[in-house]
Image (cartoon, rainbow, N blue to C red; front, side):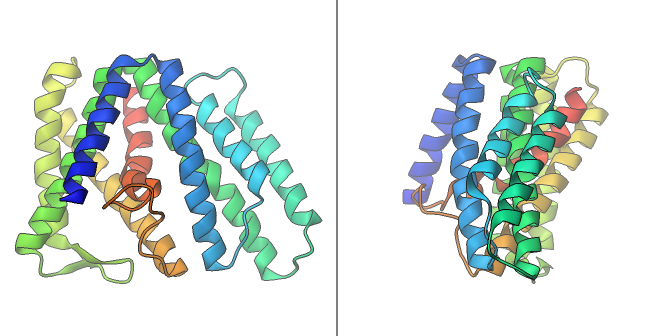
Length: 258
């Protein structure tokens, strides 16, 4: 019951924010979400045995997020400056050997994994309107829900047992059936100009990206020996646990909109 109630509350808040906020105000929300997700990411990385250069990595993550929808400064400049700062932090540390390479890799991943996708989500709102963002999030939610219940009812064959033992091929197929259908139904009204077949293809790509995002985060948590990325959301875990699929699906949708 806690999971259902908190999930309904999160959905209501998300819809309200997307519907009523301007893209600039929505960017502020995205930056807050990015910061919370970064804290969880850094905690996972620490549990694995690496250390993220905190301030430069966070700044690069937030900068990448802000530059995608509103390119006041080229995103390439943000990434290069962030890389230089992170490299300086790593080189100045007293750690030697393989952990230093792991620190650098974890630092570089943060803006790409968290900042750019959340920035792409705001860019979708700026380019295609609030309806497009809701269509994307509704498709991802429909895919997750279909995978969960189809997997519980019919799941027999593991999809990726080394990454996420509970995910099944049958559950994934449920997502591939339900989510494109939801996208076609919603897209016909809110994404004018796209034929049903294009919406079906987009739906399949979103489901595929979402599954990869889910498995990617599961891989990180499994390596860290963690069940959830955090405990901020009752019944759901952390922020990363809630946006793992969206982080991979948003760039796909963004490129489609562009």
